[in-house]
Image (cartoon, rainbow, N blue to C red; front, side, top):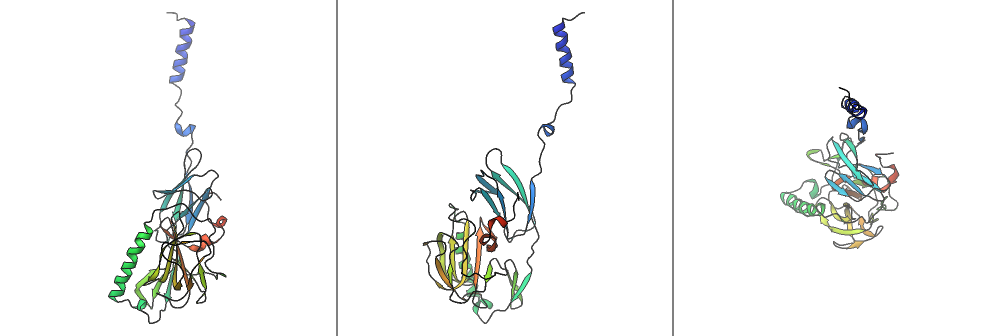
Length: 288
């Protein structure tokens, strides 16, 4: 049988196509492995890409600061790989943070003869009431950011801070050990203490372990806290400006002497405040 030329050509083309190896999606669109950066617990990772609109981490998401996503790693975070993301124009991008082991060591702290050195059952009940108040602070809904980085210094001049992350053992009692979630600054008693940025005071009162304490909500999930103050200059519910005096340095609460304890939580994570007081360009980056 002789086929017409057109039908013969069609048959040959069909055989050629059916016997040609299929091109896989991996060949047409190669898969890229997400970038992984290593970070210590209590630090921050940044990801700057023009046009960034949204940041994601641990099922949370938030608006970037000036097109930069900042990912805080909690001081209590065990070694693990955390997936992070950013959304801009086009498809979302993924990266990973590999959390390193706890690196901070221990310190022995000698306390004078104060109630905080040997808490009574009533003292511990008082502390639990304090913790109940603080759980409400940590659960606050995140509002718009009222700050930019770097944050303002809490005192002028600001000496070198120390002891962030250290496991403190008080008067040799290992059962009373505690991770130090802030930075201590050896500032003279009576020195004015200023807010790190604009915000709303959410707590301003005497607490058992922190002593005279002020907590300020700066929006975007950033809470700053100032402990051991001898005099409070603000009250809960009050709006403050960055640089405004909120109290003075003292030695109230669990303190061995006059100093300022400064702490911050960002998106629920306890991080070293010094990271946010310094040049943001020096924060570890996903895309240096």
